[in-house]
Figure 1: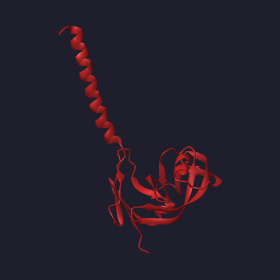
Figure 2 (figure 1 turned 180 degrees about the vertical axis):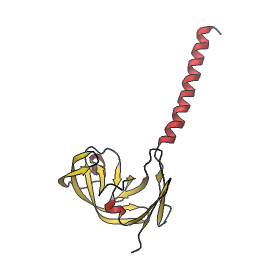
Figure 3 (figure 1 turned 45 degrees about the vertical axis):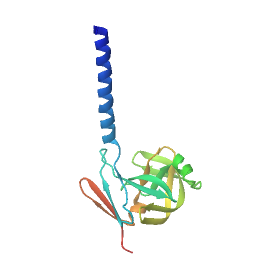
Figure 4 (figure 1 turned 180 degrees about the horizontal axis):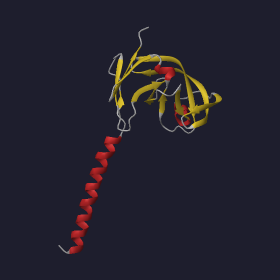
Length: 160
């Protein structure tokens, strides 16, 4: 085997090793999403590496992944998600966000569910620059008991 062939093989080996390293690290950075067990009245959510808590849910029966945002007043979604969920166009409004003023449309969802936890007639803010994340705000969280420890968050319906 000549020197050029050895360099070629070494380059391929390094590319494979970097590829494996990338796949492993990328998998660690993916958000950990809390999912309600069948019929469970509570959801345990592990903290993701980015420090946030994500939970699987639905708006009007269609799957949505929410980032729990205890600082948000209302549920907020992006324009593309609102279209996918067939939410009606809403009333234009201006919101005060952590990043300053933002334009939004205020609309309504028939129901928002997190496993067996269901909240009806939920106000939803549709924001053009929000992207693919849905924020789970206080207008839903106030219906839940929220317990947070260092690495987990537990959501459960308040007794009625």
